[in-house]
Length: 356
Image (cartoon, rainbow, N blue to C red):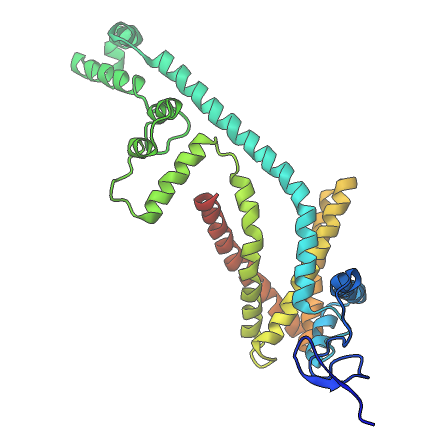
């Protein structure tokens, strides 16, 4: 007697009714929509990642280069996938970091606010003190006139000095911060709610300014209005995006030094696991600092251990001697820290200002 056949609801292929799963797509044969079915995949995938994470966590911390080596050898189901590990560890790190970032952001905002307020006070005091008339200038230069013989200045030179003192004393551009425009005038326009076009004109922006120049002036205006508030938060927000580019750059540097030791994806696997280690170790240190403020020498030990970890990981993964690995690791770290990170930091600061 021939077995009855059913049609898969997913791929619409026929198969034997006795099968529990579709032999073509793998979906369960009798898969009625219930609460269990609705959340089964989500829960099972979560615990699958969690189980592999626990199997991968300790080798990542205590066996440098081991996970990357096993992954390129073909053992790719027992441990957490390198890209998945990177995403998982980065989410944990930035979650922990967000609490510290909030405190840093508040401190920077307060410092900038105080700086802007002090700038206004100092400028007001300077204007008040420097509105000097001819009598004040005459009194100021009287000792020089009385001692004309000692100073060697004649009457013509003293008059020129009077003019210079008057000009400098009554200038509107007095103050510790100077952006190249009259801040007093700009603050007055902001206070009365002047249109944006008028504010930009007061700042000296040309009418035919291009996109980037206009953007720059708009951000200066925003910076002025907000007393610099939010600039640090914008910088912190740019870090995950920057790391998205910094990781493959690190892999590319490894590719240069280990040109014949695998394709670019091999170096990318190593980089994913190494950056995951960095996220984990920095997250652990930050958690400890929440409960106990570690001394500065501990930070030095952590920094040294990060380099030592990289050295051992490079030696294990690329299978070269310690001396060659030490030389290449030092050069990789030097290029990355001296050239790549400063350029990335400058780009991040610029982007934070232009788009905060």
